[in-house]
Length: 592
Image (cartoon, rainbow, N blue to C red; front, side):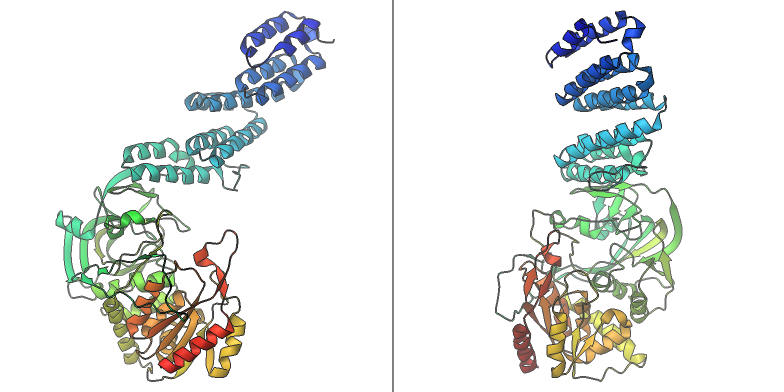
C-alpha cells in the first residue's frame, strides 16, 4: 500500500525546529496504522530520506528516531535500520560530548550481537574522531576512538586517517595531552586521563615521581655520590667555514662542563633503552633535573620495543608501572636512550667508563648494556674497561637492581629542542674526550696495533645512508682520488681498524655525521673537512668541540640543500660543488 497523505504531509513538515514534536506525532500515526500498511516500501523510503535529511542538519538524535521507526515496520531490513539508528544515536551523544552515556549505550548494543553491523558503525565513529583530531581537538578525538574501539571489540579492521591502529592512536594522543598538563604541573589530571584509557592501549597504571639529579638524590640520603672531577668552564669552540664566518642560528651549548662523578644507589627500578631510574618516589635523571631542561624535548622509551611511558614536567614525571620486572643483583649503568646508535654511544656512554674505572667504583660489578648492541660497541668496552668486568645484556624488560652504579653524560645534551626553541648545539668537554682517546690508543698499542703510520688521505663514504646524503659523492670521490685519497666505509670496519685509519690520516674529508666523531682519534696535526648542507642551525659548535679534542683542526664546507617535503632541514640531502672541494683541499694541504 502507498503511504497515506497524512503520513506524507507530516514527514514533509518536519524541520530542525520542530523535529522532536513531529516525530512523536509520526510515531503515534504509524502505531495506529494496520500492520499491512506498515510494510509499504514507499513508507520506509520516506523514513530513510527523513533520517538522511536530519543527519545532514546534525540532528542525529532525531535521525535515530526516524531509523528506529523504519526498523519497527520493515522486518526484512530490521537489522539495517537498527544499526543506522545506533550510529545516529552515538553521533548524537558524541556531538553533545556525553561520553559516559555513549559508553553505556555501546555496552548495551554489544550484548545484542550483530558484529558486522557494529564494525560498520565503528568505522563511522572512527571518521568522526579523525575529524576532531584534524581540528586539534584531542579529547573528543580520543573519546570517539575509544567508543569505536569498544563498538568494534578491538583494533581489528580499524585504522585512523593516518594509518594507525585505534589503540596506538589513543596512546599517542594521551601522551600529548599528558605532556601539556605536566608542563603546567597538573600531573594528577594527567594521571587520571591515562587511567581512563590505559586498558585500550594495554598500559599499566601510572605513578607520579619527583625529578632529582644523582647528586640531589644522594644528598637526600638515597645513595652515595663521589665527585671525581669538578665542574669547569670550557673554551668556546672556534668554528671555521670555508667561505668565512656565518651567523649561527642554533642555541650555543653551555660552556659549563658538569662534574664527573660516580653514584651508587640500592633498590633501583630501571627501563633498558631508557634513561629512567626510579628510587622510591623519585626519578633520578640528570638531564630532566638540569636547569636548562625546559628547552628540551626529553624523550624516553620511544624506541622500537618500548617498555614504558614517561611524561615530564618541570619538577615531576609520570612513569608507567611495568607489567614484568627482572631482578639483577648489581650493575654499572651503560644502557639508556639511543645507546645503540654509534654517535650517542661514543659521546654519551663511553666516557662513563672513565668513572667506572676509578678505584671508588667497586670491583666485580658487571657492565650492563642494552640488547642488540653492535659489535663495535662491545669492542670499545673491552678497550676502555680496566677491570675486565663481565658484560650483561639487558632485554627490553623493566629491571630492578639491588645496587646500581651511575655516571654522567659529560655534557648537557638534550635529545631534541622544543619547537619554540632553536636547536641546541651541545658543546663537549675536550678533557673528557681526550681521556677516552688516550685510554683507547694506549690499549690498542698495547694489543699490538701499529699506530705509527701517517700521511693517509681519506674520504668517508656515506653512500649507504638514506638521510643527510651527499648526492654527488661519486663526483667528489672521482675528483679527490688523483690527489691520493682513498674511500673508507667506517661501518664495514672493526672499531680498531677505524681508529687506525683515522689516526694515520693527515686529511679526512666526509659528511658531517657520526662518522666524524672518530676524528677524536686523529693526530694533532690532522685536518678534517666536514661537508654539510647549508642550514645555519646545524651542530657546528658540537662537531668542532669533539673533533678538535684530538688537536686536529676542522673546516666546514656548506653545500646546497636539496629540500624535500616531509624531510627535516637538519636531515636533508645536499651537494657540494667540486670548486668548493678544491678550495677546501688547498686549505687543508697548506695548513698541514
